[in-house]
Image (cartoon, rainbow, N blue to C red):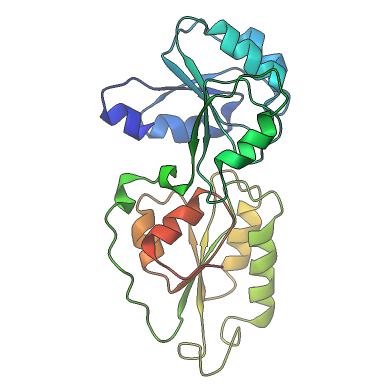
Length: 254
């Protein structure tokens, strides 16, 4: 959205519910909330506002072929429909298909569309197209310390598997001063930096647990992700867009 805005385009977000409205509005963008079920997307088509954009970018794991076909039909003659994919579920009936993962290849999508009545869209494939924010451009080579002290833990925006909470419970069970001792720890202690996503349902429990130890730092609503990542010696991350930001900074990554 920021990239489109910087080139003089107007941008609006169409959201199923209120979950991300505050985030979107806080970044200066208009949000239209459909009050629909995000995991039953076919139902929302009748709720779409009367808009005629040049481009719609759809981003959801719950899209169906029917949904994309009908949305594209709504736009015929007015604009293009793009979809952000990373699971190759079915032949997507769109104008532009974006998969910025390292494994994405033309051959994979050729297999997906072969024998299908769906026309193959324009393909935008590979990590060259990862949507990194401008702060991650031109990052210099990381100077890696000999001893790991600060550890970044990022488990995704919603963390549906409750991994941050599980990891934090394990850290607390060891105790802040005896979490990991040995020659590789800094003064016998690691500092764990937890990046807490906007939709993490365990925030209250995480905050309570973190208050029990002195070697856990919680980071919410981070405005300078580059500074946070650069300040850590190693990262443990879920496979979302944060993964590419960590790679851009050259921080060793699990």
